Amino acid sequence: MPTDTAPQVFLYLSHILGKKIIDPDGYAIGKIIDLVANISEQYPVVTDIVVSLKKGKGKGIVPWHKFTSNNGSFILTNETASAFPERTLLDNELLLNRSMMDQQIVDTDGAKVRRVNDLQFLRARDSLFLVHVDVGFRGLMRRVGLEKSVVSILRALFDYDLPDQFISWKFVQPISSPDLLRLNIAQNRLAQLHPADLADIIEDLDIYQRTAVFQSLDVETAAETLEETDPKIQVSLIEDMGAAQASDIIEEMSLSEAADLLGDLPKHKAEGILKEMEQEVAEDVKELLAHPDEKAGGLMTTAFLNFDPAVTAAEAMETLRREAEDMDVIYYLYIVDQDEHLLGVVSLRELLSASSEVRLSELMDTRVVSVGIDEDKESIADIFAKYGVMSVPVTDEENRIKGVIDFKNLLELVAPQLGK
Image 1 (tube, one colour):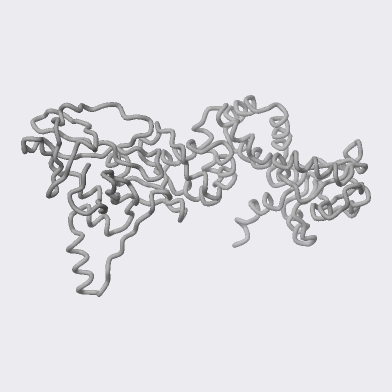
Image 2: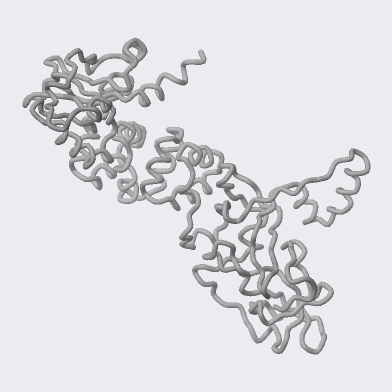
């Protein structure tokens, strides 16, 4: 679309919507009701204009390059708009007015949910690029045609310039539109957020948006986010999913977190998910489910590293590199005999500083602080505070290690009571 003024100019969707469409003979044949953009680009480019035709002739989707503009009107160069009937959008295309205006988006730079009041475009090289989302009051006033009046009043009475509040499109993740649910958006920017921030965002959304956002995440990100989410919301998110899909996510969670979640689900739902999980993981989770939540057995994880005392530091490091990703606790290596009796502990710091050939029996500290499987949370908290450790092993009556309590798991349980 050739420009009629400067080589580059900023335009707003609110100023484009409703503009007249003029045919080659100079007659007004309709008005603009939407823009189609290719959202696979970092800054989406407008590909088509959606036209509402006069006299009940329906709609047309006309390629952007078929227009020129003059004095606020859009002029078709050759054909009439009726020559371009409505069509099915491609997977990388989006109706901007329908899908974005007044909808909620995530500002992934500020980790906040915001409402879209307007869209700002850059017109350059005969193309129109979506560059900013306007989430401010000024954008809202522009929409209703009061921008100039409000700006003038505020400046005259209060010497205040009403600011623009723009978010660059590269930091925008749409979440609300039904159109977006069918799109496979390659650059899912939500996955770039810290799981704790993403959990806060999900908790701020209504139940339908919450589900849509959560199910748009990859399995690993979904698992990390679920661990940071309020337990009641965890349950609602998993209840909306099939057993197979839910099991893929829960398998990526720490064992203790997975057990807590499954324990909060209805029995039939939890059983269905467990059947879909890998047998070894399912068995570990079932073991944790057998213990009360507020006892050591319910707080522990079975995903930790234990070694024979004859293993060398080099061999232990190789195992650590290979298996650390699947472990919930890696601060300490627990040394056990062939019957899993707890003999000692080696910190990760000690392992990293040791020579490669030294055996763990020479490195281990035999003064291991542990708790019984039925120890209550108050006693466990006292041990963490007294000894300043990051995790505590859980043993049975014969001193066999059954699991490890990570400080984070304990903190999640006792933190709500700290303000009392």
